[in-house]
Length: 410
Image 1 (cartoon, rainbow, N blue to C red):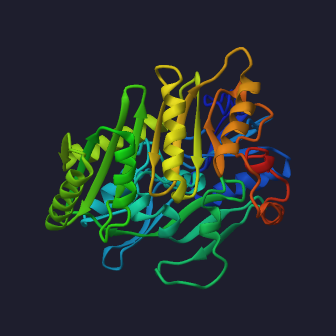
Image 2 (image 1 turned 90 degrees about the vertical axis):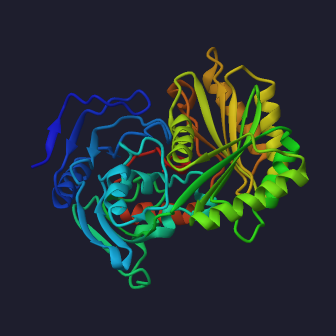
């Protein structure tokens, strides 16, 4: 039976759920969701509660629907490189299961001990490894989804090249749980890397930018390339993963290239130390400081150098705690800025407008609720908005799931 608690402890942008439920099977979850929808309730699916600040401020939350009771491995075929797992399984537990067979899910997320696979799919999170390994969407081959009519829908299977049926699994990626609640996912997995190395380079931002963009064009490009900016300066980080001989060869190539560019590796990290450095970076940017807003900004990769100049100006001219991180090869960046306490809403609107004028897209990943209230934190309305509205109406006609929290207040 689903465990129900009317003294909800968590909050979504300062709004406490009237009740919480933790079903212990997919069928129970679908039943609870269906009843809530019939009652006109607003439902927020909750995984590890690591990204609750993402999305618009809800008017109310009647039910927080936890998927933590669904955490089992349903099927694992190491020889076929496929895994089926319930949506409440944590990333750490999944990686531990795969690690026993020398395999891995090629993603890394903040707070993996708490983050669930269903939550990572729903938020569409992609960390620094996106450059070399792609996103979780690329690994989805099937899913089971609870719908607001109380039924379960399935798509895909356990075959990597399965092309039958509607691709419901990938539709759920990045939809913030507004179309259905994932109960399980089928994934393709990969052999784990034998070596993991990080090269850190301090110095001139212009040289770092040119080196980062040039390295993206190498035949064997690094797994991750990030530039971290603070008031104290900038640091370029390259991550290399693969066979021991392959990583050694990449290292020699990069060190030679850096010398030509007038850059020098200040630190080399290997193995667990390298892994820990990137996890610390992820956890840092996965936090939600109460007095700051975190922006995700995007440009076309050819404008990456321009974006880095904008970030340098924003960080260098602001408070001591202002900071940014940029993936030049992808044209993605995150920026943390202090919120104007006296007029938080006005500050957020003006900041959003300023960055929308300078970049292709801006999303406020987190900010104090007083600043976000009444603002669509997702930035520009996408070209496919009418299609998104149609899908929302078809899959969640009562608007029960994460009501108003998604793009254009869907």
